[in-house]
Image (cartoon, rainbow, N blue to C red):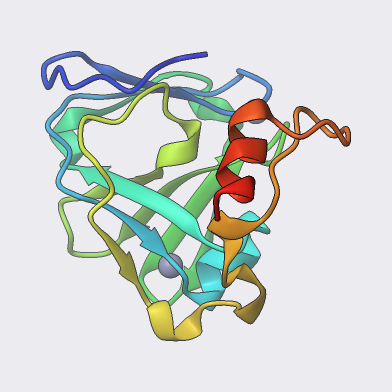
Length: 153
Ligand SMILES: [Zn+2]
Ligand SMILES: [Zn+2]
């Protein structure tokens, strides 16, 4: 497991699920936020998408560029994903010198997540997520820290 690091000069490596596409971001990133918009949600099949971004000059596709498939998800917006495994990897908006990348495909992030955006579009069933019981793997064995947390709640 890769731990977050506070070092702001370590290249940020990213890859899709199959490893075919590998990305390198040169820090510092511009921001990190949780996006709740419907387009992110459906594109990633996830309730929210945590994104970060760098300037084009700080973004490199280290391998697998030929696997990237792009489509226009909104006017002027291109989302690109790995054509082999389907992982969403890159978001670009026309006219912006920024490449947006989902934080979940990166090995580490050089900053904490700062905000929720498009929060008015959030799904209702995400509410209270931090108070749900936590289990090891997909089993029914509660994690020790979670048992204590819930007993004292
Ligand atoms: Zn892939
Ligand atoms: Zn979004």
